[in-house]
Each structure stands twice: as structure tokens, then as C-alpha cells.
Length: 308
Image (cartoon, rainbow, N blue to C red; front, side, top):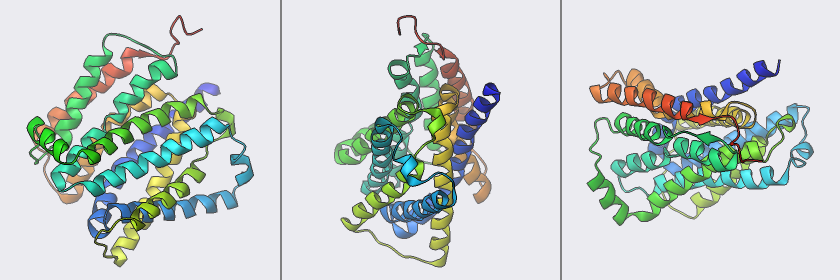
């Protein structure tokens, strides 16, 4: 019975990855219409309303959530809010689409960092294959995301020097999400449930505050309202599923599979836009599959012998 529950919880993480892959089309379209900070604030405020309604209709009152372990509630809650605010603000600081792409690549360090941080935080044990597997997977991510765009180390270095704040925020976001994914397991009791229903509206309020402190061109339309609502629903459900997987499922397997998020997103975009994938995509896919499998197999779920 416990093993079946573990499989369901792990499947929740895989469901979150699929939802994140599908939501990028909404996020990209909405951001181009109303600006990234406005899009993020709208999505998370609407999602926060969904969460509060879910709490109101469930048998789990807010008072129960406030009794969750303080490290999880405050520590993981802060990391959750900071991740979203940092990545949206980084995108808002980007000067062109090339920088947006590079910021996304920096952000996609989080699957590798999640596995890396599991070694000290969750006392996992890694073999010598961890580094080459991670390098393969990250190379695959770069190839998948760089389709049709000129991305090189020279351009990255030039953009980094001209706009360091955006790249620093993207890196900080990747680190914070990797920490959240590990600490959600370390600091919570699986039977108590999670607090994403509180994290999402808190994130919406922070993004709203950032939006009010900045200026960006905003043009709302019926399509934008619909996309904001769809993005809110998909995002909220994905975060709830991810939190369940991090607290109760196979963290290492889900983290390794999260490398596929940009690949799945690109495939969805190609299908939606009726664009034929380039050979670079299939090479990136091969590297992703190989790298993620090697990375997953290189880290043991068993604690290290000296973990006490």
C-alpha cells in the first residue's frame, strides 16, 4: 500500500512537469501582451483566489496550515515566493529575446542543483557518473532551447556584463527552487500536507507590489484575460502536484525527469505552430535522455554510510 502511494506521489511530480511544459505557451503570449510582471501578478493573484476557494470548500482550514512545521511554512514559503518573483523580475529586466532565452537557460540549472543539493541536505550518495550525466543533460537543454536563435558563450558573456542583475536573479531563482524542492521534504511531515495554497496568493501579492514599482506597457484584451485565467489554473495545479512529489515521492526520479520540461515545451510549441523540429532538437533530445538517466542512476536513495 505504501509503495502504491509512493508511485502516485511520484506521478504527481511528473504531472507537474507536463503542466509546466504546456503553460509556457500561455506565459509567453500573455507576457508579450501585458508585460512579464503584470502577467505573473495576474496569474498568481487569480491562482491565489483558486487556492483560497479550495481551502474554503475543503475540510482543511487555514488554521491547520498555520500549524505546519515553522521551517517548512516560513522557509519553504519564502523560497517559493522568492523564486517566482526573481524569475519574473529577471525576465522583466531582459533587454531583448536573446537575453530572455539566456535567462531561461540559467534558470534551468535548477534540476541539476536539486540533485546536487540532495547530497548534503537529504544525505544521498552519488557516484562518479553524476557530473558527466549532468553535463550531458544541460547540453541537451541548451540545444533544445537554442533552436533558431544565436546563442554562444561570447554573446552570453557580453549580455552578462551589460545586464548582470537579470542573470544574477535567474541564478538565484534556480538555487532557491532547488533548495525548496529538497527542504520541502526535509522540513515537512508527509502526513500533514503542504501549504501551496498559502504560498501562491503570497507570491501574487509580492509580484503585484513589484509591478506597482515598475512600468511596463500593458494592453489587456479578452484573450489576455482568458490566458491569465488558464495560466493561473495550470500554474497552481502544477505547484500543488510538485509539492506533493517533493514531500512524498521519489525526488531523484522526478528531478531527473524535470530536465525534459524545455524539451516538452518546445515540442508543444512546434505542434501548435506547425513548425518542423530541427535536427538540433533531436540531438538535444538524445542528450537529455542519456544525461537524465545517467544522473538519476548515479545518485542513490540510500543514505551515505556516515550519515548517522
